Length: 224
Ligand code: E4P
Image 1 (cartoon, rainbow, N blue to C red):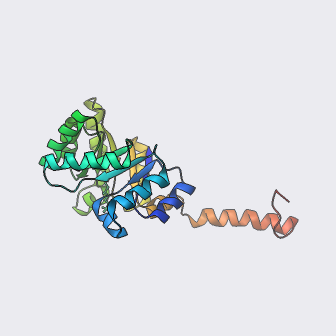
Image 2: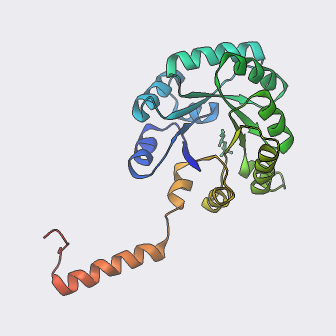
Image 3: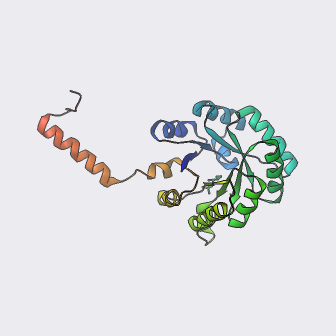
């Protein structure tokens, strides 16, 4: 399962890329708004931080299919070929996906709350469908189960589309989908860090160092 960073903050992205095996960055209009910078300036900075080969997902904001396509053209021209155009899975968006598919764009169908939306977006040519796990939970449904249903639909219909699961509230949700074999997940830095955060592990590592230093001297490592 690919793991992407759902954030537009350069410092946080830099740290995630340095420490963890991440495969790219996803943004949305709200995430970009939080940074308070001119959107293309921020996205260009993200692109140069992660390099040209990594996936960068950028959402269109227009409300008609025709304008979404024009936005997609500008986004891809400025940010390069490994850019995925996030298109909301509403009627105009599905229409835009069909048009974008014909033109060869990379498409991420976003704002997915139901398997029905995912089915239509996949049929329209989306490369990824992005179910919003936590937001689905907040509606009283089950986000992880919805993503699993979508995975079954894609596999049973031989659709080449992959899941890019999004909107997580905890790291275990990410792992559940990894176990199920979905294509990708995008998560905020704290959720990615949560995959490793465990006081028992920290205590075990501290005890190894303490035992070693007690026997061989303070500051002693296998280097000195
Ligand atoms: C990704 O496609 C979504 O934009 C994002 O993950 C939504 O996350 P949120 O529900 O935490 O806002």
